[in-house]
Length: 231
Image (spheres, rainbow, N blue to C red):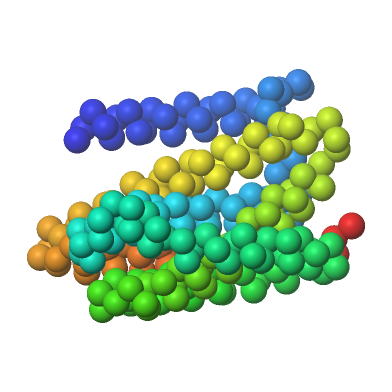
């Protein structure tokens, strides 16, 4: 729709102008110059990319469970638990490993595992086999446990105490924008697949594999992180 595209373009333009002004004024509202730090920039980009790849799958997964597997609403919600349980179980361990080794090796491992999980989840969607889907969810959750919290902690450790509130807000903004755009992206891929004649199961499978392709960008980001130990 032209109106939608015009609004989207105006938003991008105004955001770009705001960012440019914050970089050139003497007393900016938002200290974007902090992103000159390569590791901080990599952390924030990694969080945004993984949120982009992951957030939409919660929506797509619920639709899949209800309309493809024909689960009732309560079981459809519970079907996403394999994604959450590894995060809960591994978060503390990931924190200890971060203290010992820093964020770089954890991010490298986590992005590979998360991307593999998305691929398995996508294949399971084509097969309409919940056991395969659950295995993919578990891998994705395990990968996220080694990415999100360590990257967030490392980001805040890179800035002075008085800047941590602002940087935390920027990180969460990137995270939420990544998730919102990811939901729209997955819906667009699924809708395009259905328009080409795919059924609902396969269209969601393609959307999840598209998310895996985006997640693979996280592998590149993690591989290019500066080699600096934590602490």
